[in-house]
Length: 446
Ligand code: N7H
Image (cartoon, rainbow, N blue to C red; front, side, top):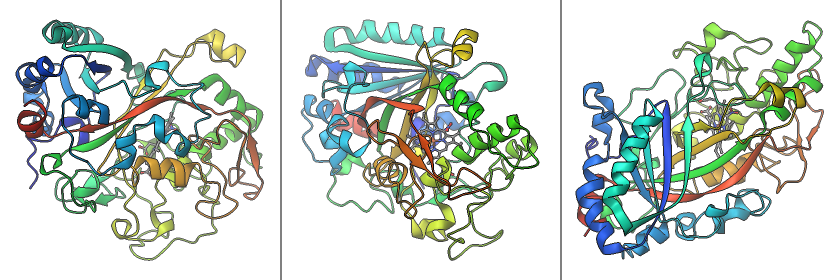
């Protein structure tokens, strides 16, 4: 029985709009900002109940979250008991595999960002209008530090990220709130929301209840370079053309085809009907069909490599079933692509000329168990799920050094492939806390 009117809307279900702006700000005058937070921002904060009811959805949805230095600027000194959050993302950089800050957006280097306002709507013009009226009211109480405009890709690529793969298929269902689709992870509410059942951290201030930590990462994607790699290295299965072999390589790197069909269920060629069917496209465990307890066969990667992005970040039966008792490392993802489509010139030159990527957002009640765990201990860890697996070929990072991956070649799954290019490059980000509406009203704005 969650209080859906008190939980910011982006956390559990996502604002899911075609256009989303991330506005990163600093607080220049705490007293004025608190006043504005209560009178101007709070009435605009979109809660979960509003997003669930189409008739109650505002034209432009708004959420807000604060960094550790932002809470301090508001003179809120309670310890949220989350050490990555307390230190900020820059301090966590060694755990994330980034090669230092060379590729970071300069504004993310440091701890100057106090908060982020997320604005989502059907058009960038709606967002612009909301933002300019907001800015006028906030006046000098805040200063804009950086912003990133995200947008769904055009036409039939809507819902697909920039490499071309359908995204947003698999997010966990929160126990008692969402009824799961087949294959969807069901997680205790407290794995996502602070202070709820299953949040193992004690001693947090009561006002933190029903908030969630928001991890933001600007992840640049080298799309022409990724495509060139696929073209140059097709999997040479006897029944496949070179083009099909290249497509299969990409699908095995991710664990899904561009349509969303999982390679575990469609091991050789894409199956767009399967990809589009929410009752089937997530219904697999890497174990036997219908298996509900025990583990998968820990050597079989003929259907899906252990290194595949979705297997690294959610190993399902590889860690044992039921999943809710074998793993507390789930996140709710709510990102959106940013940047323009690949131009013919970029495609022809196999070189990225204009930045594009994923404005990555994840929610969890514990960053060390959630995002940080997935990135550091799974994706970047060549020994997960066991020795010899190698890196996650999509997001696994090795401080910029080459990454060895196995399992990709269907014809010889132990053949190592060395990736000398990072197709996803971290441009940095920050760790935030997305508080409940009552926390904004009763604690943060007073
Ligand atoms: Fe990933 N991609 O296009 O390759 N991701 N991801 N991700 N990701 C997923 O199942 C992608 C990133 C997870 O439940 C899909 O909804 C890209 C980070 C998790 O089976 C695709 C980037 C982290 C899942 C992509 C990126 C994760 C998942 C399939 C960066 C965490 C669900 C769609 C630019 C540290 C796994 C779907 C499950 C799915 C891609 C980033 C985690 C297509 C391009 C940083 C947990």
